Length: 493
Picture 1 (cartoon, one colour):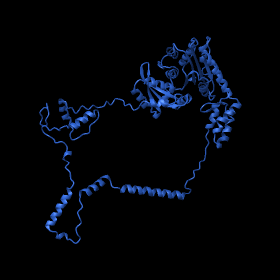
Picture 2 (cartoon, helix red, strand yellow):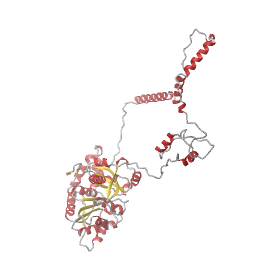
Picture 3 (tube, one colour):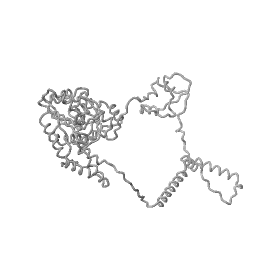
Picture 4 (cartoon, helix red, strand yellow):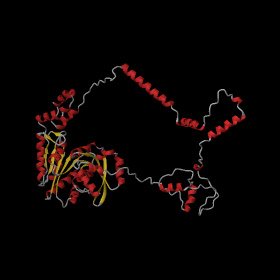
């Protein structure tokens, strides 16, 4: 049993022997290796384990094929991971693109393709040409490893290698021995099975094939459980009391809310209290009918004085006066009324260009604006925003990407040449807060790279591709080192 720095991995003898043969074949020179295995034999795990622990000194490319991908997506996924400057045409031949970009450089590359039986014959032929071309280059060591179902690629490989000295190497993923299967079952399945399901899972293990995938599927079996929910309060009577208390509280809150005065009623009450003065109460022994005329006049005068006490002159807040003959230069004589535009309104129009100015008492009408335009005081100079112009809602994540560990990885989703295309990509896929955009310089041209999330290992980044929406999987996202991302950010700065 082997251990990684993060998780425990169970390596069985059958799998270790296959990994050792792969390491030996791909270490010294270029080869074209075909690994076949039935469904559930562990091909995907072996492919990823080989890259993670047995080929970590090589420049790697992993392609996990899906039925909905096309040839251009397959080429883009492969070349983007192994070329230092991934500038190529996805429609070009795979071997020609690699030779053009790496013509004067040395390389040590391993290309691993899972579910290779989903590739088209055109892409398979291009991979074979790339392997043949690397045989003739002393500076190149290119190994191509295909993992596929049995008998799916045999006929095609035989036709390509017929009459040639260079032949593909065929390997097969064997079934686990009884001892290895039992060890796999106990350590990776039974340790995580509930006690009430243990008997059922053990009985199912007796009839299952000795393949890792078939054994792991036993842990996904479900059993019906009778769930008994016990009330916290203990009895139906207590439940009824609690419900009644809640209803009383809700009713009381609703009554209190409805009894509160509305804003209009409160304002009216305050106005009545502040405008109407309170007069001193008359003596109870004084008869209102016996008041003299002088006393009634004095009380009326006192009431008037109290009513206007504290009043202020607010005539300055009135709107500007409408004049019949405004004083201006070059205005065509007109007997219609004009509204004078104050300097404050003109300043607001100039400072808030492109925004709508709220209507005021000093704002001119459309007819006045047309006449004022001939004199240089054009109130219609406010520009209307272009409705077709895209709104950029994102910001660059250079600082956040620089804070990530350079040993971690991210998923590159796309590379575009302008901010409008980047915003359109984000709007179309709606990736949330885990998407990061940063600028990069390639061949003296500015690009905008769109990446997704951060993963501590390359394996976790590659596994996360399967969790993305189908529309993003079609684009062929690939794991990219944060070390390379941070170098590109530094170059762009």
